[in-house]
Image: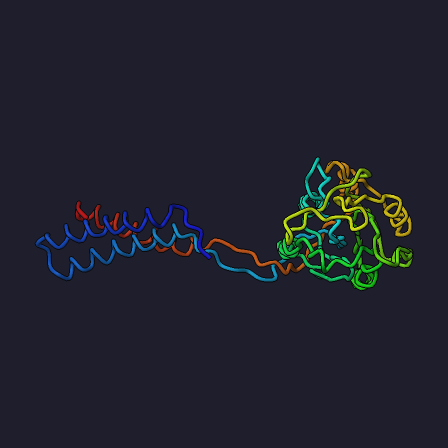
Length: 319
């Protein structure tokens, strides 16, 4: 990986011009051919080292020991079509706010392990617990509006089994706190509208919150496939998705975590502060890939050749 300090489009022509001018001057000199070659070679090495330093060649490092928080954070995100209802921050899709808030949570709890489950009429583990937050961010970026013909109604029950799997894996780790953020509008539209009890997961959860999105007034849902808002088949009018905070409050109570209505991103700050204050830091082997500068290898050679040039100039009074 390279990260040039000065753009190559500037550096390469400039260095070729300098090297070409110097070579032309040396060739015109009446010195012995061997001395000419030696002079050009010394300057070429100096220019090459300057070029390599400017490139900022970054070397990869794996499994680096870093200071990590003793927290596993599990995101469980409702990705049914109602989560794209346009009633967040005025007329913005709910999912836009969800993605921003989750990114903020990861930033606030950086150093933790993160995992992501999405669910609609079925559940999917998009990212198992990992220290690489970029991997989880990439998983979030894959969440897209479902096809209206694929949507078979909303049920919160779909997430239960995958949640149990991820929470059980976290509970087997020593000295870890397991935090859950269950994200939904609480609307249940599946044929079986009865939400199963999530109380069986309570013993595997140390904290977190059910985060509610949407409004009681409801929001319209735009279908990108037909390029129009989804219609209510019974009335023929534009369908509205209405959030159900009663369902979300009951869910939070069963898992013994808080319910937070996310009409304002700052609503979660006190909880994040509490989670951070209750965490500890420990040295662990990170599965992140880190990059480190390698310029010092070339800087040593550059300094050595510059010192040689200084000695020659002092001794001979010329380059």
